[in-house]
Amino acid sequence: MATEIVQLRHPDEFPPDVALLFEEGQRDSIALGSRWFRNFIDTVAQDEVQVCFHVLRRDGHALVALPVLERRAALHRGVEALGNYYTALYAPLVHREATAQDVAELLREVRRSHAPMASLRLQPMDPQSRAWQVLLPALRLAGLRPFTFFCFQNFFLRAPPDWASFLAQRNSKMRSNIKRMEKKLAQEGGRVEIVVDPTECERGIDAYLQVYERSWKRDEPYPRFMPGLIRHAAEEGWLRLGLAWLDGRPIAAQVWLVANRKADIYKVAYDEAFKEYSPGTVLTAHLMQHVIEHDGVAEVDFLIGDDAYKKNWMSDCRERWGVIAYNPATPAGAFGAAREALARMLKPAWLRLRGLRPIAR
Image (cartoon, rainbow, N blue to C red; front, side, top):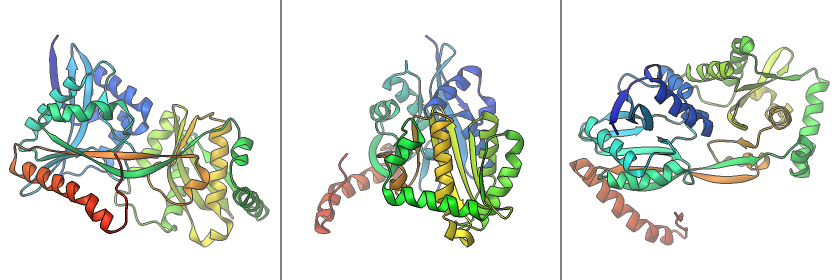
């Protein structure tokens, strides 16, 4: 069987078999599909970093793909997951027929093409996924020394069959607050809409940007990313852009993406001048009812962060982890691995001194 490893710079270069592998990845998460990476590269990736999709193919079929970027420093050349704080889930794309040996073969090529690569950092990942289970032994087979680390908690909801069931599972204070604030907003002429139509996309983006500008959130360092994501989502039929209005002015906005019976809550913001209406709560309630009863989702995901308010809406919590693998064949990689090993050896004692408990893994 003929095996080859190719390097691609942009999803527009994907041959059909590679595009198909990313379509399969997209079924697990929107953030693993071509659309996501195309928007990320076009709106975020900067000239000073090298973007590359390393792909192992066998007999014309893509088996493994690793989307990465390279960062160079004076004494350290590091390779990282193609993503940043916008990325709620990352993974190598591993076909069901691919083995740890296949992944290791690709990783050895990554080492060569980014030589002298000192480290490879991939995050955030699902530690229960097959990609994670295959990756760890593959890193060792490729001559790298991996260390895993905790990234963040991920709150999610196992969606009930209807809105009434969802409300019944919430506490009485939350149910009362939703009802009271919906009534207050309606009595003063407010309304809620959910933009899904691509023809309404630009109007929705404009309203979202108005709200974001007047919210408590810091300015986006990459202002083109969210509008690009909203446009891509609208074209794919994923978009659920919630807007709360009062006196013709948008006072809250939320970007939800729905695909594969899963709703991702990607961005939430409200105008602080209208905080008394709890527009974020009202809007979340409307969107939650929509995705449960109209879209029939099985899961709602709050993605990144352990903000206390998320616990009120969600039913479960899981963890996202990362892995950093050092290349001991380079001075910087050998030093990094030794330092990491020493730090992990000393950390339990340090935590005990502070009265804390180490995270088990």
